[in-house]
Length: 104
Image (tube, rainbow, N blue to C red; front, side, top):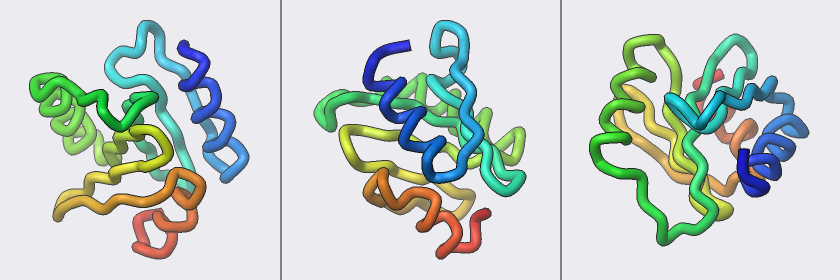
């Protein structure tokens, strides 16, 4: 787990998420659970770093298959993918935003 992934895991924990580190970042970097809803979380330290298209498709399909939300964190922004689209939010406000949109 990279130092930045540890920072993100800690930040999510402080927001009330139960956070699990995956072995070898497979299939995603982190799994976070809040109010019975699981998030598959891919972490990129810099906004300029992209998730490979094939990796993103695999991770999004996995999230859909298991009823999870797929979240990509780049820098201090989180993109939350739902069945109907996506929205971006400051990582510090992730839990609050999920509640606001009635996703948890």
